[in-house]
Length: 228
Image (cartoon, rainbow, N blue to C red):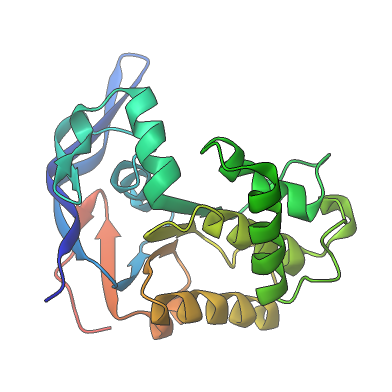
C-alpha cells in the first residue's frame, strides 16, 4: 500500500504588497502518495509555483499545515526546513541555477557538501550520475560551454546527488527545444520507474502525457481532478 508522502491541509499563502494583501493560495487541500508522477498544471499567475514552493519546504504557508512523511513541516524553522530539503527533496529549476564558475561535476557534487559527504564519495557519485544522463564527456565543462539541454541534465543530476525521495521540477522544459524537452522528460520517467516521487510544475499541456496524475490550479484553488 502506498503511503501519504506530502499532505496539505487548508493551506493559504498571502503576500503583503504595499497596503494590499495578495492571496495566492486559497484553502488548498492536497495529498500526494509515495511514488506518484504528478504534473501540476496551471496558467501564469495561477499559484502553481507558490504551491510547489510550499509543498517542497522552500516556503511556509500563511495559514494551514503541510505534512511531509507525517511531520508538520509548516512548524519548522528555516534551518530545520533546509535540513529536510537537503535530505528528502531534489530541485530542478527552469533557469538551471548552476554556478557559472563551477564545472558540471562540481555543480552536481555541491549539495552533497552540505550533507558532509566525503569529497571522494560525492565526486564519484556525481560522475556516476552525469554518466547515466549522457554527460560523461562533459563533466569538466563550465555552464557557459554547455547547451541548454546539457545544463538541464546537469541540474537534474544535481537534484539526485543526495538520493532524495522526491524530485520537484519547476518548468523543466521551459528553456529547451521540443526534442530536448522529450529527452529530459524521459529522464524523469526513468526516475519514476526507479521509485522516485516526481512533481512537475508547468503550463505545457504536452507534459500531461507523462503523468500518473494531473492536478490543475487556477486563481489559487485546485480544480476537480480528472484522469491523467
